[in-house]
Image (cartoon, rainbow, N blue to C red; front, top):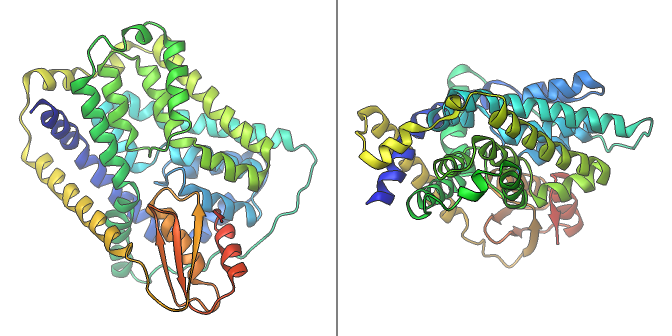
Length: 405
């Protein structure tokens, strides 16, 4: 019962803000063309770095979903510096996660989190720019994808709703559910004094969180309930911020692809920028800012005394649950393999969410001779039907920012 109570509390606190974030994300996707982003993000110098960071902070893209976007920027003329800045800023936060952060962790966290993402991304981008010096590397320039957005306000509104409440829910839904469950389990079953030692040693606790957060994959929204449960169990707010920054922004798949596309030096600077930035802002929260700004007393009180769910938050939670159920059912249906005598199977590396799945599907579908494509996210297998050239499929997948076996 206590586990269910904690889970429902976090869901009710987050759901109104998450739905609002999904709506804003959908409007941005439908009403702002990709060519607009490409035009503003392509360039060199510190101005391009700052612009990339400012545009990346509100975008609701996860760490794997941002990779194809950043690689496309790079191949359309963006500097390594601007591309790195975009890669650091975008997955750390977004309009959906900022709203959800406010709901569970309070306004101070909701403000500090995007500011930290902005500062670390600018620092990392400028550092990459300095490291390039005068070296000029060839860039495989490809045309910016045609703007296939619908025309007309009504069509764009429908596209916004579909992207926000179907595509985006499918992209982060699994990680959101996992984050809520993990947070509830930590809250209920981890003893109150389990993190007592780490809580008294911020440096040790931050390093421990970094070791766990960097290799794993978690989206910006899914990391919020986990961070909250860690604070409730005694870890410092600064340590929670380290998880919120490093978890979404860095993982081994991202590091590998960045190394291949932009060089090992840029990849190392990218990773170090996230680590140094997370630690710096974590210490700032723990030692420079008032403790009461980051207190989560409402959750502690709810866990011990229970609380009443408002009608509005309950309705929002029901809507969110229905959207999650629909996205999971849709994924299961789409994972049915294509049966044909003219099929080939490929193993693709680097896919972590449905955004990646959609990107790979679209890239392979554009290959001459391909009739049908089924990309299975869980297995990493792509079944391609039609008379096609395997090398063309391989090139299409790599052009999208993924590896293929």
